[in-house]
Every structure is written in structure tokens, then in C-alpha cells.
Length: 201
Image 1: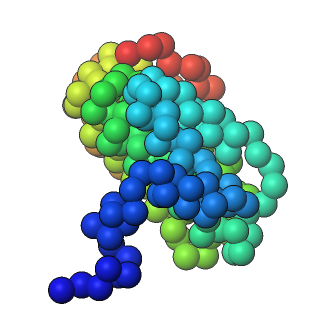
Image 2: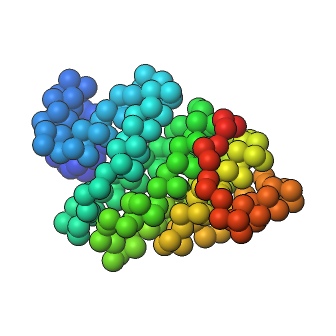
């Protein structure tokens, strides 16, 4: 039998909700990632829209940042971004597929700007963006975005693919684009068109 001091879910549950809440507040003090995670859990408990809104704000903050991400802060940064990606692909996608599609596409388009300011010799940050691109294809199955919306978001992603993070995205979403969409995407890329904001699915 495991000791009652062993750190596991059952033993923690025995502490009771009030004591656990106190501990979480204490542990998260001075830890921005922990506080952010707790706020996201509270938002998710309120509604999928609230969670999506929290994720959108965080992605915008990351996309607009200009400070470098060095090796000392990389692990926490990767964990933060991976948390956003995972929530999009699971919790938001299950409750609001169209919102999840837009968020996944937004994350996929952030790769170049984010990777350019990070010291990512491990490839962990790049891996988050690889997975975000795959999420777009998976979420499209339930979100069912229009071919036009898919084309614009794919154009946005592959036009900013300096690290190869969105390689394979066109192939993954080809069934959604169709022949006409693929031709339009090819012509846009050859013409060097600037991506426009996609319409709602």
C-alpha cells in the first residue's frame, strides 16, 4: 500500500478542495506559467468561449512580443505554448470546432516570428509548431471550414514557413482545398500574394 505522503492524485484529493486551493495559490505565487494555467482552468470551467478567449489573448501576447527567448527561459516558454496548443486541439476543438480551427491556424502562422527570437537548439519549440500544423488538418474534419477559408489560412501559414514548421500542411489539407483550391493556392504563391485574413468558416 502506498504511503499517505506519496504524491499522487488520491492522496491530494484527501486534502480537500479548500486546502488544495490554498496550496495552488501559494505554489503559483511568482510563477507566471502556473498562474496562467490556473486562469485557463477557471475559464474552461466557465465556458468554452471563455477558454478560447484566454487562449486568443495569450497567443496575441506571444505574437506581439519582441524580447528574445534564451536557453534559460526556453523550457517554460515551450511549456506555455504547448499548453495553448493542447487546449486548442482538445478542449476547444471538442466544444467549439470552428473556434479551434481559427486558433490552430493563428498559432501555425506565428511560427516564424516566434522561432526567430528563440534559442531553440533542442528543436522543442519547433516541435510545437509542427504539431500545430497537424492540428489544423485534424480540427478541419469537425470544423468543416470552407475551401476559401482553408486556402487563405494555408497561404498565411506557408508564406511564413522559414523553419519548415508548416511543411506538409498543403498535403494534409488538400482534400479540403480541392483541385480548384489547390490551383488558386499555387497561383497565389507564385504571384507572391500577401495573405489576407480568412473569413469565418
